[in-house]
Length: 120
View 1 (tube, rainbow, N blue to C red):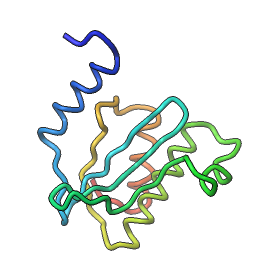
View 2 (view 1 turned 90 degrees about the vertical axis):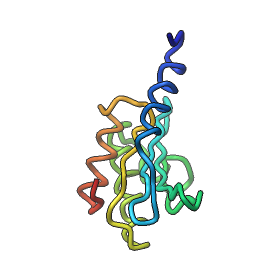
View 3 (view 1 turned 90 degrees about the horizontal axis):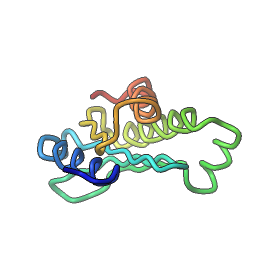
């Protein structure tokens, strides 16, 4: 039995990763949610390559997200990662919530990526 929240999340993450696998045709869109920031990466697991990434960290994204709530920043990250994917010709992905509950910021990022044209 998990003793901490982190151990419980890592247990859920391992259970999810047994089923979710990214390929060249359908890479894996994974999210990470820290207390302050959101990160999203599109990964081809067969080639062990990151195809696209976006986050709230960095000068450009920090300036565009200034004064926004965390949920709205997550939407910006979802739109940014979808735009990067569309530029590389990626339209279909597999969503990996990384052990986080599909709720709040994780759901906002996923919905924004869907609205921007990604299919999952």
